[in-house]
Image (cartoon, rainbow, N blue to C red; front, side):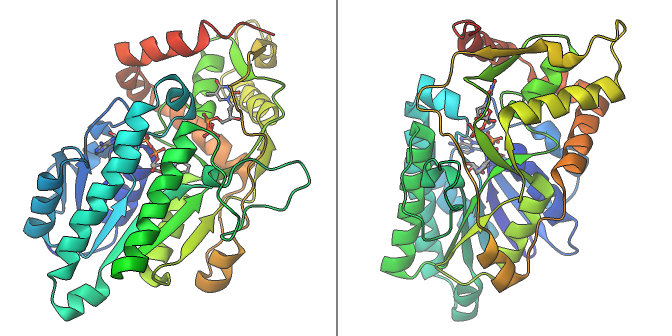
Length: 359
Ligand code: NAD
Ligand code: TYD
């Protein structure tokens, strides 16, 4: 394949948005290494079926032999590493898979990348990049008036998910520091947009509200997240890959801090407008405060000025317009929704919500 990059986790939410955007660039091709766990859906990339510039390999990033052979065979000029277990509530219910994929898997990928990169000719070695996609959750939780997370904020991960991502960030840093592997790390805030698996806040609430089910808001609903439209995130990754300084970390945020309760009421109001209920009962009535997540981080906020200053990136989407687009996408793609709500999904919903009694 010509001018290839290796993407891990490209059948997941952010990965599939990234692959679709990347393939839009003339001459570029993508090898997608994805285990197709419950969160990976090859149908997200069905528009690329038969496209010679796209190859899906179903496999595990923990499989060193497979990763090494893909690198030798396709000679990618970059690795963009999305593959992960990504849901905080699942990391509280069963942390082991998070340690395996996020820590061990990232280690295997870095080690195989180092071997491959060391064997490249000088020009290819200079051009190669390993972009590690991480999260703002590694920085811990902010108080209401604290300054936003910057790239120099001390790590203080609070959930097993955040701890596993923090460990992977440290490994990525060490591979750069020790061997000079050309690593770039990005830490972004909560993404939303098309193809997000409906276990996360926004798609879960859209679908529950659409179907007239309770909207389970954890605790007092005042936990704050910064919301980043997935296409803005993908544009930032492309900018970092192209012009980011090797060994550096870049924070990526959406300039859209919102309390969860505000997000959920916005979703209710959008659906009332776009799909009015027959009885005209406002969907806000479905909001139910439920038992909180253990160790629930209060607030995340991102200071993305480094990315703006060095690479000229800014989020293009406002939260209100991005949320409207997202609600519209789920309304227009109900067959996608049906295809991901498998037995395993329903099992998770039962496990996470039946014990969460209303407050
Ligand atoms: P996702 O859960 O939607 O997708 C993860 C993908 O990785 C799936 O396709 C899955 O099949 C694949 N995968 C899992 N284990 C694998 C393994 N062992 N080998 C190969 N593939 C495997 O996740 P996402 O929301 O798209 O997140 C992508 C990345 O961005 C993750 O690293 C996550 O930590 C990070 N991130 C996500 C968010 C967010 O809001 N979604 C925010 C900050 C950072
Ligand atoms: P989530 O989408 O799981 O992302 P993260 O935990 O990585 O930030 O959750 C976003 C926020 O929404 C978080 O504060 C937890 C809250 N939340 C609920 O109140 N109810 C829910 O059913 C879910 C899934 C999340």
